Length: 460
Ligand code: NAD
Image 1: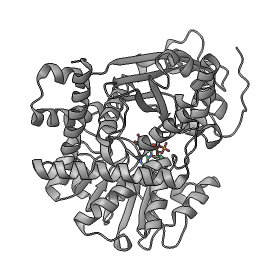
Image 2 (image 1 turned 30 degrees about the vertical axis):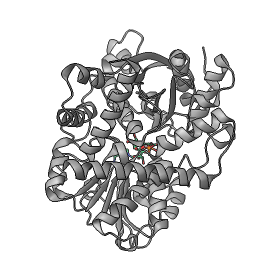
Image 3 (image 1 turned 90 degrees about the vertical axis):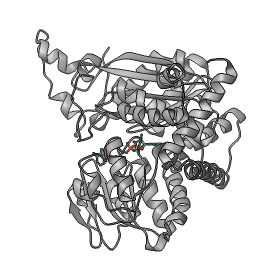
């Protein structure tokens, strides 16, 4: 099969540099990104443990406090189904590259499996497992009728062309379509996937099953996406700030915000924080970081990036480039990690000067860092609560698709606010009652609800 894709630009540089001879075993391994190779790779970054270890640690902490029996704990900790598929794709260099696709369905006691799909070179089964478990607790904490799942493909998404991404996406859906369905498992966007990728997924699924908008969420509006979905995770983070700000007596106009990551979650959070009157004083992406004591205009920064500029080269008033490590040390009221997992760890937690951390990313804080920050009196709104805005509006999108009826944007945002505020208050009250952190209280609530549903079904 020859795939015709547009050549040129920086597309596929890394892949195109691989020029193996057919007999060269080492070079063949370079083309083969399937699990044997990928899962062995050392993890980048300085986190002292993997995402799965982080999630398992918090689960065990809450399960201990709830006194859950070891046998039940084993059911809740492990995944219901883990699938790993081969994705061979002929790339721009004319060669077939083999990637691995994963879908982990962690727990479906409360409803169909739900969770995003991440495209990133470092994705492996361990990470997808962790993210799937987080989705189980997240949907339970917010009280929406889904279970938890996650998917991923270990492809270098940022260096692939649109045509290659489309081939990879369609191949993935072909391999896992039997596991999916509007009442079985509903994917959504995550790191390096977006509305376009969801549109390809829906289209591929539709070839086999007929037009099925409710098979994925986070779709383009033209294909049944929900108004307000793109900004939902960022908006949810700001709802969390508004709730927590009362406890810490923070006022938006005197609140300085630092954001790590300026993708979907980070860029929307930046805009909505600034609309509220907060000041964005530092922001980073994978390529670098910038700061400005007088504030960074997120709209202007976004326009600069959309015009092909690098975040680290943005030159607004008072803006200077800083080292990525320095970003977390900036003096601010609110720090929002909105990039990858494990970025706040034992080696940098002590230097954090924020009063509040609102976790936009999944698993950004390792347990050691969590303890250090707790000792320092930093208030943390944990990922399983803070970044749930995305899956809540995904739920609304699914409902709208099943009803074949579109809601207005205001209605979506209001309903999101109601659910996020209710979840925050339930977690806060539980934390106060049990003298627990927000994270432990959130896990306790999530675990109890999943266990109740599993028992009611007769599953355990
Ligand atoms: P994205 O791909 O749109 O953006 C990721 C951003 O992180 C990019 O700006 C990238 O440059 C940056 N980044 C990557 N590595 C970095 C590093 N080492 N330092 C600083 N920045 C870095 O992804 P997204 O959808 O915005 O997701 C971000 C995080 O939020 C992920 O952890 C994801 O699981 C979580 N999340 C996303 C959603 C959603 O609706 N998209 C929902 C809940 C949680």
